[in-house]
Length: 476
Image (cartoon, rainbow, N blue to C red; front, side, top):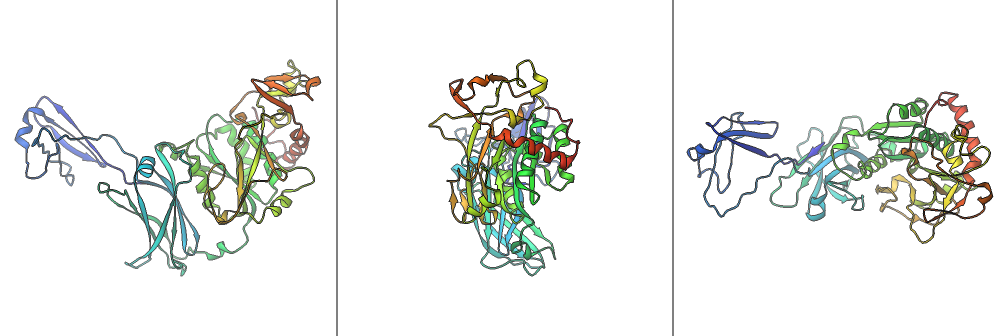
């Protein structure tokens, strides 16, 4: 839902008489003869501009002025970036709301736009002003558009009487040129307020918020990731995926059984593609997910489909999160794995493609990058009730403490780009006799790490128990 669009018009000069002036849907066009412009000049109506029109009528009067040849005129064409594009509004409690959307990045970087919040009770003409706090959580990665999360907080509860009302967002360009926008961000209907949501126990222990899914995704890698993490998180968990064009029919075939089982929600966010943001607006998507499911789980996790969480033996996820319960957020260390290097043995010979291709990706990609002195991206989990906005690798807008020293409790294995590779991942092989040595590939040292291979049999059994043979025919 975009606001603050600038409408422009274009002119066409032709030989012949003045033809037509026309306006429709906010975009104006007209044609006239250059030789007859002088007869239509009305300098008393406008000053130092080249064109003006009365847009209240479909037939629009044309006026042309040439008063000062040294007064230069600038004629814009097309559409400028919107002042604000609203995705959704969410209540954060009796007196607070989060408005999630996009806005022109140049305007927010170089200008001074501002917002004001107002609550108008139903059947009332007067409203109550609230404080609007603007957050830009995409770390400057935005493109034409940047992500904006606006927290609207009121000094006392609003709408808790159940009578309904409107949340109004007043958006200002921050200069004398742009017209302020009055945006009805939320119309809360009578009887829909439910205050128990903010105090009762959530329905899930764990929630997964996925970024935008795009590109030619591998159905088999999706199958493996889903089975692994459905078991990892257990039955009191839920997964939210966002389709930005990557959920083609074969991927949907993988997800459908989990959707029917109530474990997965798939949302279509393809409309965001028309607004040019960072990586299919993934910062927008994770912030919407954060607020949409804020009160649905104790912990919310953010990581990607080529990443696998792992808890060391003799520990459980419940134990780890109990240890970290005093923190609003914790980050997770990355173990970067080769996406093409496999161990060659009797089953994994170069000529035995049909044999090793039946193994799952994480049980045969067993060589870990041990290059020192480089910074590896981390992923994270939060207690969402205490988070105002979030990012891809961590949140900078939390109430409470963040813990980064978690490597002895939890880590994740990263198989970079394997989710978008449809072919066999094993493309280079290491002889068994070299398994205990350091293997150098392209200037990067790798060591053998068979940790994930040991858990593969239990994951496959879990999937069979849950889904039977429904997913057995999935291709790479």
